[in-house]
Image 1: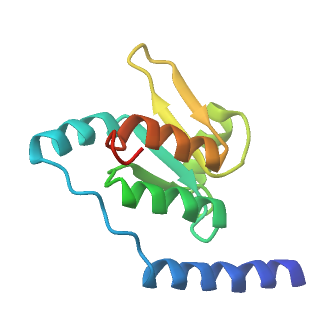
Image 2 (image 1 turned 90 degrees about the vertical axis):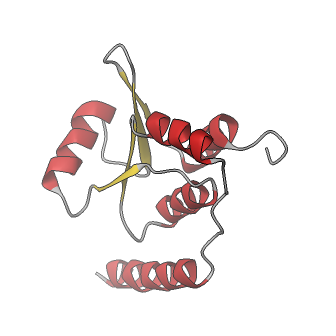
Length: 127
């Protein structure tokens, strides 16, 4: 019980700091941003709002100006069920990338997710 309270307090502190020190989104040409938006429409991030690793991924998505659907697996039984059935476990953050062939890729580690997003969407000079 005490651990749950500590996690809640730390989570709220991290959310507050994230709001204060929010990264500046990358500015793109409107046509390029529309292309990026069409690619990110195939992605969704399963997360818990105050999870530090989820905050790390969301900050990266903000910095890269990515419009990825956020799905809170703690507050939505539907999202939790989809995460477990599709990805195989209830662990966050998890980036689901819908494949054109109908096969989804499920990426679980925050560092891997951030590296993937940087590799795919960061401008060459910033990567």
